[in-house]
Length: 330
Image 1: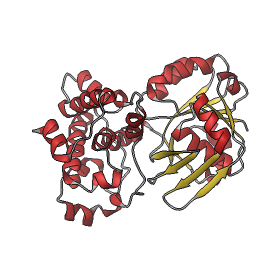
Image 2: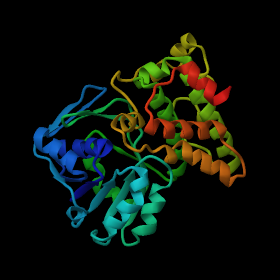
Image 3: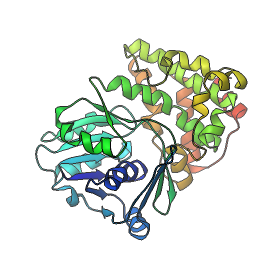
């Protein structure tokens, strides 16, 4: 099998690296900066459970032509780059190649499918966080397997993902899973604005109240749209905001597992802000604002988070929990 990771940044290097480290040939395609790093350092993959894997000889290319013979393509570009990536792949992919979207948001699969009519496009989702620590080191800081739309075309690859420690969990309907992940990802801007590790941020009630407000707003809109998010946590998603609002000592008692996060864990939005890159805010909280618009309603909390992240993209600052809560809900 010929597997290609297209847009190999943090998530792509980690997922593809786990496959490569456990015996599956993988070609990575991405930016020259990453190609240079991996040529110097190789890939070093770690996780919160103690995994420690290395790939010394990394095949990392910088042009779409390297995907010409791909049987399976894992698309891991940022959401804003999905249409461009699809057009690049359409020019080189062979008919029948399988293309999986492992990206944030809920519409990337549709974008790929609309442009890759000769290929099999499968929507997927990565539930865990990956931190790029530099020098070829990528660290998975939170739990989760890989989620995908059920498709027989994935059958030849299931064993390779299982062997890599990243089994593919297949779903008859992927949209409820994507919205459930997006509900959790509403914390990305809050974490980025806090400038704290995930565990430290979620330990503080004011930040959790910000997340609860964004989730409650979104859940109301999903109810109105007839979308029921999948249950990714031990409790149903509609009960989660109430748990987030609990005082710290009760939250630790009832939801202590949420704080059993690797101390290194950060969100990709925090990484983007630190690196001066454009964030995916339009495809996370911005997706909630679009849903509200389609229903003739508003989403003021999520709209404010979009606004604050856009401001922070050009003027980096940190927000305390009380400061941020006041801007969002008071």
